[in-house]
Length: 285
Image (cartoon, rainbow, N blue to C red; front, side):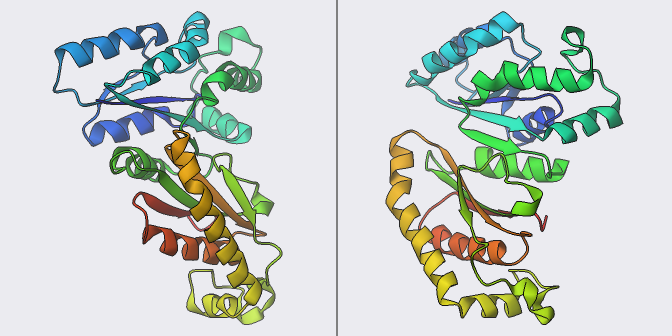
């Protein structure tokens, strides 16, 4: 049995993620009281062999007393050898959550406990922090459309082969902020910048002119080789420590040229030697 727990702050896309899993055959339960999780697992493993894949959403709509018990319940569930369990935590920037609630005019589930929407979002962040720390994968939905979020959940969770490590490369621009969901960050701003070559400025790291410019740089090639060597050496340790997902952030100034090119080179290399490798260009999507 495979169990996926979806959690995260309100407005981050939990319903969309749950629907994406339902579309690919998961039996889904929204707003499950955390204290009922062991009973649900016991019932499914004992009585219903047809339910091989189950997804539940547990979030701030739970009673606080239930949420406080979730870390202990989580560790108890992880020790159950009959199931494979993973937790996916969704989040977005404070400003994005404010904008989403303002546009939909929905009421925040914690509105009764604080004075305004901004305080409710902050309160929820603190309330769910212990759960966020348990997550196998964190997804920053700040810049994701509904369709991109659905694709991300399907690709990284539902379609992951066996229990092998899922590796994702994500390019980004530092001037737009470091993504919240990356585990390791590499800085490409010390490399030659195609932006300052007028005829390359309008291209990206996916385009041949920029690729030719960067592949002729010894520094660029050395950087790529060093990152490959680090990951090849240490990724097995992530697996040995029961990590199911690793996201590698590759950043440059604007997220258009150097980071995109390096991420593409790394993706090409590791997809040839591993399953479950994906790539995302945050500033290009």
